[in-house]
Image (cartoon, rainbow, N blue to C red; front, side, top):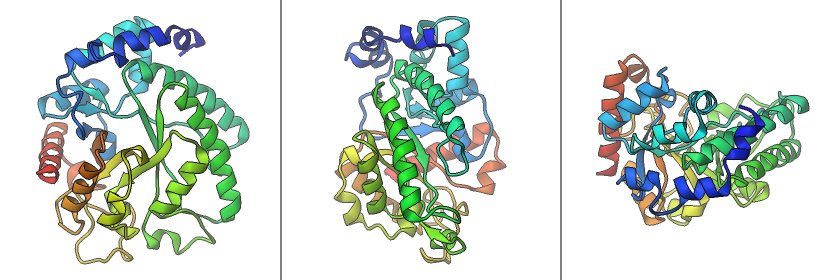
Length: 316
């Protein structure tokens, strides 16, 4: 995607196609003004699918949004035009749940790789904004064998701060996911941010458009209470993951990436979690990330149907 593409996505274009109440997206999608909405991301289910398949199955199974495939949409915009890509997506009636965050910001990434990926983010964010996307998210490793807490903090603030500023220039917020399980941190030399309060502090240091990617599994393992969640504001929460924890294990015994479909085991108080989101008027996507072998083995059709039913159960 060249610099010319970013230049054509001007404020006037955004207002016409995305921001105004009478825009194409708002007219085409009667579900666009809902508060919290069902969002489909096959990657989060551990399943490979094309963007065209994702969109078709999202529409068929009652999802209101999908996470954008910037590669697919970027190619369409380059081969046809940004407006053609916009019109194609708007015609689906779906919302943009979020965009991927491909910045190489972690401790193993060189400064040169970080700078190169930051330039790519500028192009991707400019395009994502055309589709009404206002959210991006990434996870933050809660420990390190190389970096002390202070060194890790400084790295995160510097690199994620620069990334957040790029996103913010296009009206996009950055959600940061804290990783809760104590079992993950136990084998590392240095511990880093792994709680909701800690991530709120890091977000504040990164910038005004940074907030939480709130995953109910990590909230459970970090022992976040419903009262804690209700003390948040909509501005604090950028993106949400739903899932369930393994039965027979307490929060300190849970293993990261060993989970289940939302509402499958009833270990996590999903009603309390969703109720808190409603209480703070969270207005973003609900995306399932179950790390479930059962779901991964399903066909695309069955996985979409099961995921849709499970989110409906969580919202009931």
